Image 1 (cartoon, rainbow, N blue to C red):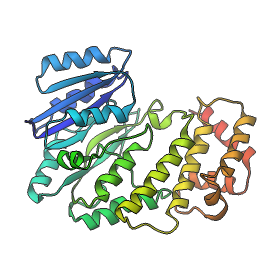
Image 2: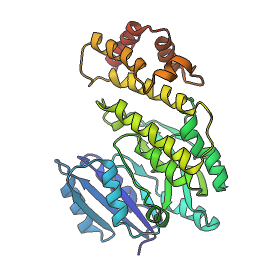
Image 3: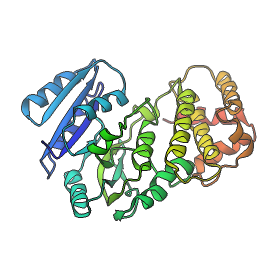
Image 4: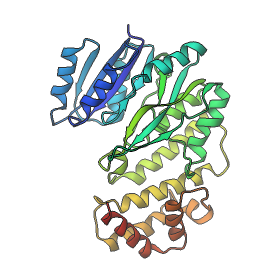
Length: 338
């Protein structure tokens, strides 16, 4: 039985999969299994997965019809045998001490999870560092709730936004299975998973070192056009509210309005994504409709967003003044520069 199970979903990942897998094989800590979940790829991903499994007995492959990253991760959790669960995206990679550093922190403290810092990696090779979700060291369940879970709910506009990503953490497989914690949806699914896991009162050991490399690319899911974004966001907001009530998570009274404004800014950016359909006049019309949508309308009319970076401030100011045409022209110029 391996100590750690690493789950790597892969969909049409032939160009980056080798780097990701080799970063696992290069780990200083070697008592792991890697579960490659081929999510119905139509390129050479399936063959690459089988090749890796043939070379290394610690690597297993699950081939399945395409059903999205959440289903792929859930299948990986079901197949895992390790005491701890780690995640890796196919276009990212680990530093060689990713597993060992967090295991040392876990074993020294008997905590129920671990987390680390990470690096944003840009196409030109430059990096910027994001620290661990809490300061280096050990943190009680209450500290995790106050310092990590609550910001995932309450402070979604800040320029120092708490990023809700799962691959910076090690999770207890026992806790996941006993509580049937699973992923759902195709966008913002990480945040719900984290809130449910840590909202139950899990402690955390933090390693303030960038152990994970997060590749930034215009082709990633966070940069594509999402036709169903508003519906997805609405379901996520309702799911968060249910978790707040279920686990009595401390939140500010206006947390939903804060989150709704954050969602509105993303929704507007989504409307003007290069791949979005419609001409400029249609996108401007749809922006007006977004502000009146019940998902965002209360926050748009009553809440003043603060704490944002300069770009978000400009977009929010144009929205609040109903300057939709200048906003559309601004996005048009921005997209031409890409």
